[in-house]
Length: 511
Image (cartoon, rainbow, N blue to C red):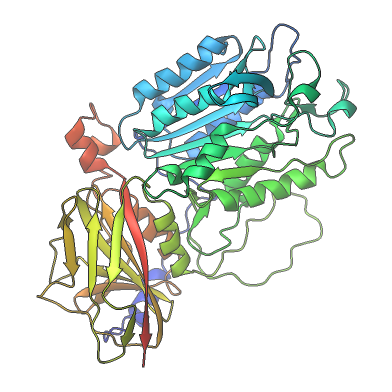
């Protein structure tokens, strides 16, 4: 779809002055983001020690801060604190701190294991975290704690640098090796419990098929597949954790040009580092980082760049230990809308429908209905058939009344304005956002285009990033009550909320 006001030259002049952000990937610090780090290296009762885990505490803390966790919301539990009772209490204390629509990052580094159980699910081989005394904090108990958290939290991200399988290389590793397996089995033969089934990940996978279940709010990151070992490196920490942080520190690539780094993009980068590190290691094979749940979750935002990617041949050798920063990827507005949609609160259901899926150019007008499970503020974004720009269609200069009530059906455009079908032929992608708090798109360089607003993503470095940040941040986010609240009562939580529901819709323009 095209608008009649020409703004490309102005956009080029304004946006070529954009300043680059510091290298690396991060989110802005927020009092609504919490982290719990659990690390066990000094085991008791004959459980083999993990000499690198002490370094994982700092690694995980850096990861948490990259994800927007403030120091006052960071809790660290080590070694003797993590008995079975202590581990359960750590989860309960976290639940006590988390308020509705907060976000949570949970990290565990230590031994994983498995044990035979006969519980409500029948006789089975359960996955477990091994406590400091060698007891198992089994998957069913972990699932119970996570489910309780998810009833309040908007997002739950879990990162497990451990494994639940002895793997094919366990017997070839000894104390003299550079790496130690992060797996321990309590007595007897592992053959009696050879194939653990992690009901946490199974439950998330099953619930992803149920709209509104909240499963899309989960991202469960494991250092290894169910039949692999993950590795500890004495003096450095978990191999997977090291790789993940390096990617957050600027080594990951925004492969789809959306302006953000997803969990999957970080995983791809981390896996390459693991493969390289372990390629020539004796007695071990590379383990594979896996993600269950929302692999498209935005972990951080890519730095702005002055120009799209250009082909370049890396130098064969380098004197620096840090690789060159990845070349920026050409902006992809459609990928940006997909990322915004993928990071919605899955418990907030938005129904967005077009009266007609195919519209005739210069004849038809757009006609939509919108319904939300929650009260909120409506924003309608579009990437037109040319795929080059973002358009903010609603609210606009004619109609700024964008509130919607739960269960209400909103018809757009309203009678005071209309949206004609002007071409070019092709598919338009529209994203309807229903946010709990108002959003502010006025500071990202959008320019008037009739009553609407538009920005050319190709001429505007960082516009995808800025569009995502505006969509996922309250317009009040820089206020004192949002940044440093003395108390977070219901009214403040709503004014500062990052939560939103969203729905995507494609409409085809034809001649």
